[in-house]
Length: 359
Figure 1 (cartoon, helix red, strand yellow):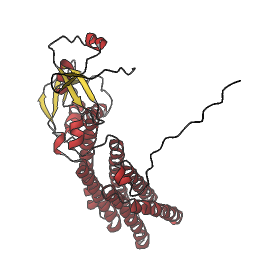
Figure 2 (cartoon, one colour; figure 1 turned 90 degrees about the horizontal axis):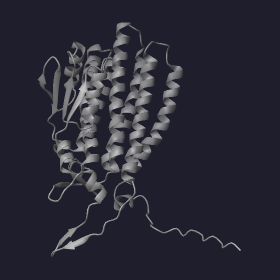
Figure 3 (cartoon, one colour; figure 1 turned 180 degrees about the horizontal axis):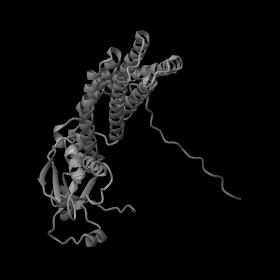
């Protein structure tokens, strides 16, 4: 769409006005006296919305056809996607009757989506509504909370391996639901922040460019939680097969796990301390850890599930390194004053050579 300029006019003593494009006015059927809504965006621009579109955006009901969601967990994933996209009212319908499997999926996933509840349930309809006020949350706190949950799952899984404690491993697996809840909520807020300036500012974003970095950080933390859950499951399988393991082998793996945990925990700290030197040292540490993991895998006894655990630890270390890189990137996206502590910023104009005239 081509940019169209409009001259700002002064009306009266202090009022400034700008005219609306006539083509747009005709398409939207706007007449003199009609209301339009002006929405400030995060990047400083203004969005003009006809009144009918603004009202629809405020209270739009999204219909999900349960008859089409006839594959396993498809309905569950559609609900999660709608929740993350910021949809407040979701109606699930069927032409005949919503199957028992679909009802179970709805009830199960609603428990993982903070603020989403079932308002109405009939054989052909299930009405879901989200009551979360996004302005009541701060993104920094959600990231810290998700990092703490992921770290707890990780600690319990590795302690379960060291002590051969099946109950502790089961506790770690159960705790992963908390990570999902926090992740889904945070992603919902990030999507809303991209659409509405007021929400972005209240949850802690003064620059739109910071949102993708936070999205990647949250994804990495959620993956760390998933990997930790996988370790806990492998620990249970080791116990069920009664695999003999030497104390020396377990202690070696546990030592690697402590270094890995230090890596990703300190990487998360760097997001808030904005210490690029520590972040850089973590990336150097990751290179050393990679070699340790390679050597351990070569020398590891051929025991079922044990190599899988070590491989998963290596993947968690990789995610910690990614978070360290993202923490550096977030600093570089901050204000010039913050970046200037690391880089000297010099703004200049590059003059292009003037081509010689043809003879």
